[in-house]
Image (cartoon, rainbow, N blue to C red):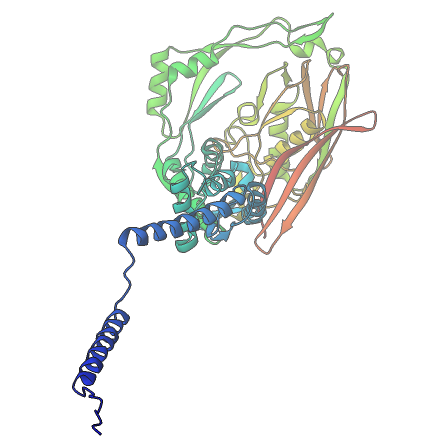
Length: 517
């Protein structure tokens, strides 16, 4: 029996297996290759995603800025005071409270040993808070969304500090400086003149110091701009100045006049005072030669033309009502001082002012000279009490000043002493220095007034007479001492007008600063 064995091709089996393995191997290699590939996002897609993120951030930033559009952006300061997240009104209130406290202090001005004080309100000193707040508020609110966002972002990162400006009224400061010039220890003395009987007395001025307004105002600007005046004094800048040359033509035109008779009417009630006529008793050329040859003082003879009817002839019936009066005490035992008081008061006694006319103490009383009869008596000079010609006549100007206050007359020029005088309280005095300081008031009433005065028995009294008006006020005068230190005293003087017991008006007459003895 032949048994046929089944042939098995051993060779073919490995071949098939090898191909399958190769296929598997290739697949594994392909998988490994694929597994090692990095997926790359297309550039366009990346840019698109980035822009979307920027737009989202920009939109969110813009949205929050829009929500705070009625407030000041973050990171903003005014004079290093944070005003971020505040409304305009809140920022203004915050800064005004800060600056109101800051600028309430007096401004100290000095020249060598001379010191005085200026109140900020006297020169309208203000910090421009509104403009600074308005500028701060408008940061990031231009209307351009891109520019706004940039400004707000920059302020948040870098911060913004706005420096406000401080302003003052230069014209008011000039007026104050012109008055202070007269108070300097070595102030220039201007030439002057006055009539003494049948003589015209001309006094030549003296070279001295005046405040240089331009340089001093610039100093104010520098110190006020950053409010450094709060911790520093402001130095008065001065310059030498010669007195103005005497213009004889102007003097003549001022002196020469025709006489006028006095009269008054009753319907309406009005007084028209007499006026002397005057003229030079010499020619203009002769008068000029007299001035040129004089060293300090000279006399030009005058022809005085008397009116037919003088004011005194009208009598007291033309001035029926007492409008105001005031008295001060003096030491009658001091003969020289008493003499000076009487000389000055006699020049004023009987003087009449028509409505609108201004009274000048120095013009009426004249220079205090030996020729006029004045004696040596105690005066204030450069902060000290010394003997001086005409000492005591400031008591006459002071007494007249207070009578004018009670008569409700308008003050035109008024100065206080360096020290509080003994005969009145602080704020109630009026000092005069011929050619330097004057006391002036205006007849601001509807009718003429007449001044009468007496110096006798240790009492100096002034009275103002006239006609009461339809509406006549009850006048009260008082002075308050506002502050007192070891160096100075400050006071304020007020006049109150009342009608039927009710206050109609209270006015500040003067703010005075005195040195302490």
